Amino acid sequence: MSSQPSALPNHTPTVSGILRALLEADLTVQLRNGRALLLTFFPPLAVLYGLSTAKRGSRLGGPIVDVALALTLGIALIAILGYTASVARDRELGVFQRLRVTPAPTWTIMVSRLAVQILSMLAMTVVVLVAAAVVVKVTLDPAAYLLTLAMVIFCSALFLGVGQALVGLVKSVDTVNALGRLSFLPLVALGLFGHSDIFGTTFETIARWSPGGVVVTLLAGAMQPSAWSVDTWWALPASVLYSIIFAGIGIRWFQWSTR
Amino acid sequence: MALHVDDLHVSYGPKRAVDGVSLDITDGEIFGLLGPNGAGKTSTLSAIEGLVRPDSGSIRIGEVDAVAHPTAAKARMGVQLQSTSFQSDLTIREIVRLYAGLYGVPLSRTEIDDLLANVHLGDEASKRFSQLSGGQQKRVSLLIATIHDPPLVLLDEPTAGLDPQARRQLWDRIERLRDTGRSILLTTHSMEEAQAVCQRVAIIDRGKLLTVDTPTGLIEKHKDDPRVRKVAHGQVTLEDVFIGLTGTELRD
Image 1: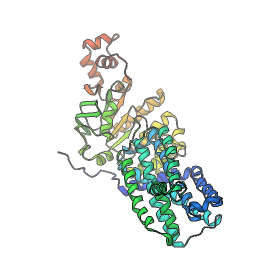
Image 2: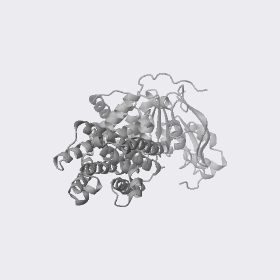
Image 3: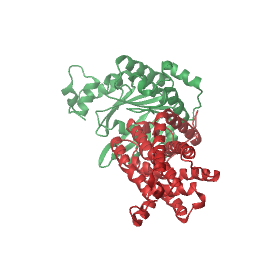
Image 4: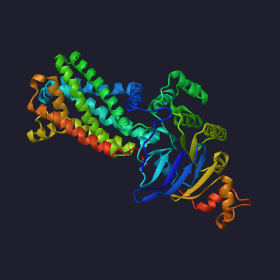
């Protein structure tokens, strides 16, 4: 028969205290990697500029979709390449094993990391939206800005779920990096073609309901609430479903150690 | 009793790593676990630390059932893993602050700096873990393992890779921990270390605990064992007992 744990003589860690300590550390690490963070801002800005000046830009859905695509690329970059690489590297170093022998529940270790990534994505979103307003002259209503930031959280959760599944199931750092690069392009490209009929309507439908397509639909809808459609409504539960499936797989079968 | 392990079994797939290990560690005791590579030392520690779930058996940290209440058990023990690493972008001061927070120990910057100065790391507070020497890294790890004043400290090969000076310093620190009433379970390959700091030593091989006693008690108990006599060169040593009981073949 197991006995109930008695109170500690000196210290009792609380979940809120544990989360605060983890968040502070993870945020410090993220800010200290400022250069890497800034580099993740560059590709979405470059895509935004490239799409807005390309002649076929209008065929992909117009300037709002251009901004949505740039945001999709930025979110995917942070989630699929940045997050997975940092988790795989820390796992290889044994950082997670060290954390796991503390009283910190394992979910707090992951939640803290994911929360910091979502903050990074929100920061990237603000930079891209400011660039869109200043450089490409795409401005939104105040409500649309708020809705966009809210949808970025859903989209971040989706792509972070994909990243979590990838890094959760694959142990090797090199394989995680390689698979990240391999899966990154199709995810973003499908988002791109979900709003284009250049490969036909069947492909467009598949692309539109792929993870990348759902993200572009949500972001484009949020930036233009007047054009919020039935598809946009359906994209919302679809993003939640994708997030639950991918993150569930990645957390349930997460390999804490490379041994 | 600081630690009570009874009939512990741990498997990794079809491979049985720990096969019925039982041991007790009393308050204020340094207990050494000796064994060749792959003998089950780290797996035994991992089960106590809550890193692997045992197939069967019980583990009690003081009054707490560590299998049923792993979080409460983890709060009562300090751990130094065999190969410890911390977040590479944090400074030593930030690492100490993080782990103090995880154990619910509120520490100010001054208090952290004082703790680091106590282990002769005052000047390294702003450095990264990877910038420290092996001995300094072990001192940081030991400081973090004891930051919450745990009654039980688990040290997995704490002096591996250290030079003689750093090793002696660490032995002194381990003995000081014992002198403050803590119990310590350490694994080691070093017979010298086992004899120098451990009150009792257990030899483990192929997942089974072969024998437990004081270092001199083990020599007395096994000095006439033919397997030990066969490998002894003159007077029987603890290493002769170890080799005699575990065999001479190489382990990976």
